[in-house]
Length: 192
Image (cartoon, rainbow, N blue to C red; front, side, top):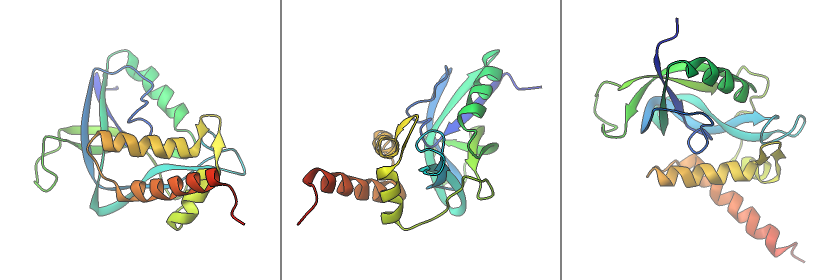
């Protein structure tokens, strides 16, 4: 039987676009995971044969990943998870993690506020792209587009949303810098 109240942790597009009604929204983090643009997106930010790159989580005992947790409750739980299972179908699976609210310091061994559901694309799914150099990933993100729009818009919106939360994510920031350079170069046109 499903609990009456559940928290769902978002670290990618769920930060700015949850797509479901919620009772509470809480900025916070999870421990032992790093956000990386390692997952291929052949259904949202790319197409089959030319996938975009979206974030997933990779295990890293030294890392924390900031994001937003949403509390959902009641009769809507089943429809919310049905919606998310469909939205995250391209290799993501639901897991449980400990969620820490922003009010707790990141270095204190404070107890988690609660467990939260999170969608993670592990490296054994068919759309997993894995690591590449930042310039290579940025080039792929810059050129990819799919039914949900330009892949670069996903990256830039994520970077903007993290700044809005007061969070610095070096991986996202480096990719954003490279994509913005590619945008500037494309506006300048080819050089002779």
